Image (cartoon, rainbow, N blue to C red; front, side, top):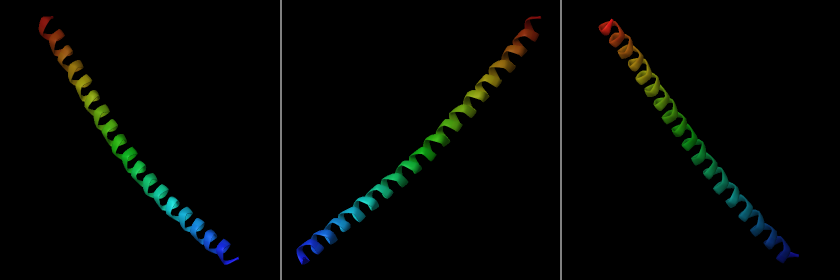
Length: 66
């Protein structure tokens, strides 16, 4: 009986270790997602500024050639 109990304790310990590893990996992935979302927002903001600048430049160009 004690052999089974020891085996059970060992099994439970392995499960706990795997759970901790899983939770750590999950936190790492959540941080990475946050980082990528910030980069995406930054790129989108830059693209909007470029488009806005291009539109403004085009309008000025049209005024100048008119």
